[in-house]
Image (cartoon, rainbow, N blue to C red; front, side, top):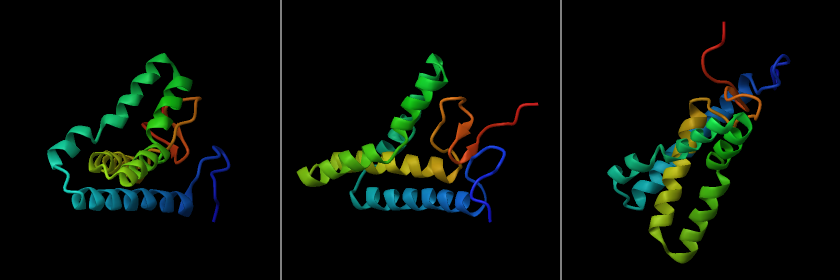
Length: 133
């Protein structure tokens, strides 16, 4: 089975499905942790889409847009401040990290990957959006 589509270089086939399933698993684990932390679901709903505010950087062009989007959609940040919250006994940081990780998992499960600087539609999980005519 092919690992990438020869014409685009994007992940395709079985590896793409596995990456999307990992996203769904990340979201499920983050939701479970958030529930165990006793966070309010109104708070969750209010903050769930906050990482998508990074899309506003696309107003400055595809390169800065991709950079800020990727910073807001990588697991490094929420894992770091979630670990800090755990070390300091700060449940709010843990809740914020769980919300952030749930968002990232949700996006990955839907096929929205990290962006390339060439165009908004180019992600590591393939092209997103409608194909141009």
